[in-house]
Image (cartoon, rainbow, N blue to C red; front, side):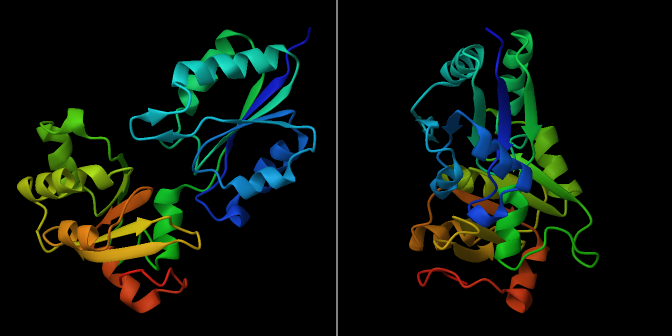
Length: 254
């Protein structure tokens, strides 16, 4: 049997209207859709009525399917001759493990295509009224995983982030917020540096808490901020007061 094809698709940051045209085409033409927790489920409404849906969402320490099982599933379905969309939140190349999945598909000689998506590290700040670059506030921008347990003592990385980057977006970092703030201050970032945490960015549940490296932990705790959320560090956050445009959840904190 001739192999099918796998589309590794970025679903965008949450608002279903932010998926790309190409991403939507892949959903509409697939026999199987393997989707993550952060891919808006309303996107499945565009699928063929006969399409098979397989959920493989992940919460911290709670994985519906392990990554190795997902890899195997992609191979199995494609070898059955099916067209498969692997639907991931945000952009599949930004902490989306697309490289691992593409490697496995390539090793099995299964055709695949990577379809970029709008990353939450850029889109969530935009919906919070914060551009990630601005000629008066920041000419450099970094995307950093918030899973930093193994990086706690990496002096080189923390020093580079604290001193060499104007604006930093930490993904999946709410649990490690104290570590992030402490390490940035310890390595030279001013404690007064502005910080925003954007929960469920670009969706109707979006909430934003703004503070500083010194105050944001307490403010986030008081607002009961949880994942998924983007932590944005940098003076560019102060622009929110001038250009905030998106109507947020009534519980949001400005």
